[in-house]
Length: 147
Length: 141
Image (cartoon, rainbow over all chains, first blue to last red; front, side, top):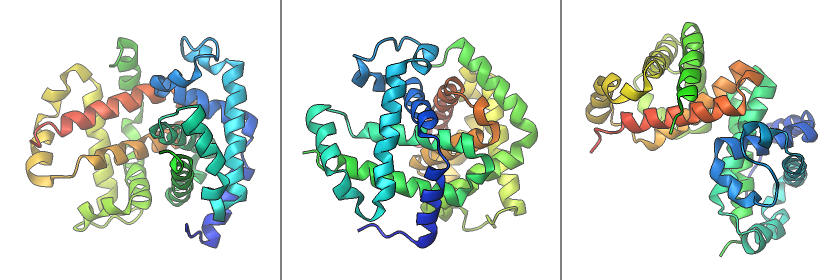
């Protein structure tokens, strides 16, 4: 069972309530596809991913990024039960999408960078540590049902 | 692999950041200590509290070495030779920690540069820091 202090809950809720999912989602996913190009292997049907500009302006990628952020929102709303909340999503990523779970960490790192760029110095070392604890739990839960 | 364009971009960024080496370096270190407490074990002989002399001078040292290396990335093995020896025989920092520090350096860059730290700059910088870390660990065994 993951333990969260009041302060950690406040930090996570505060971060996510300050985010525009329609903006951050596309930014995080497109950054992942640009910084770690091998992740593009899962997006074969998404149209033009030929270069950074194509990825950044790809509407299918943008829509998917928003979907991912809304998925993360479920963890924010269920912080005491992330493992159970993501059980189905984990099965989906394993059985249907066949995503190597190492990729979850890559996307999580890109999301961290995007949020850091947005929040600036408000993304203090302590806030970063809390955020990274949160994404680590999410990443672990998403990989949980793989077998 | 770094393209010519990427090498130029990396050199430009570090040239601009040299004058805030203390700030960026100490920020990255503090982030690493907060997120990865095990990394503090290498600093038990120093005062690493925010704003301390040790932290600032250490952060500066690291950033200036990274900046120096960026001036001619194809010569990293030559430029870093003394630091390779230092890390292999004296400091003996487990190389996994280089990854942790690099990640925190990227966060510091994002915080400092905001939107300017765009995906292309991020990709180039991540590649450079990985190469830097790999060269640094070359003499370990």
